[in-house]
Length: 385
Image: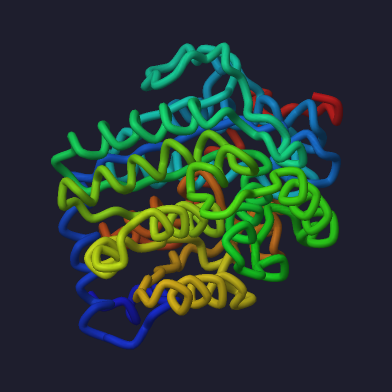
């Protein structure tokens, strides 16, 4: 079955059809053998009013990542501990990821970073939870460099130990803003290209936030990726940078499931690597995301900016999942541009399609789980969660 028949869209470097089909084959061959990580992380950047749709207000955004991880693992449950925050529109993309991960029988590993609470569900501890969220990037001092290097080393060690292909996903409220800050620190003008979970990206707000953070960071000559993450990044970036490099050192293909946050990780790694290693590194690394995120071509432009800057051939794939036929507004909201991506929804749903599941099957199960979530009171009904 070819990508055209499946409805998969490619973006980024599409120059080689054989290369595209090879990416599809890598995915299909390894669906049952993937190591899937969901990295949930906290940054106080998420507390800026209007910066993110991952929760209707700043208070609710503190719980979003934990609630997403719980739902990804457990689905709709009367025993849920964390209520999913009420959104202005749509519903958590963890719904999509849960449904599709169950269809293809995969069990993600949760890595909590800077969440400030110990999850009751199975997870991988890599740092002291008392460290809490990283500071707001406007300070120019998001984290100590020691913390950044520690997270990087932990990710590197885990990545190097892997013996199967990897899918990296995230739930980081405020993470698109830290991603923008990281990319702009290295000279990419991306303020009009970085996406958002909000229907209308808060571009002017983010522009001001990032400008202030970079000013306060006051980078010296010859700053590196670790300096940038310490100044304006978040814990997810530090750990994932190591995880990605480690997995590639172990010769494993890596799927980065998401949008601009994943591109920020790739940029950080490309800045870190020697010139001669960049092509080999990127060959078996690719972005997987939802079709909703590539609708306006901004993500494609962002990928190509990175391709041009570093002279690499990064390729992206977009899942064909759509909710046009859904009877529920919360799901149809995705078609209007709300939420769009998160919690690995693009990559995990893409795997379900490659495993032979149809759009109507996935939509039906998403609707069923949405009904159960509502019946069990799993979505908060309060605007001040």
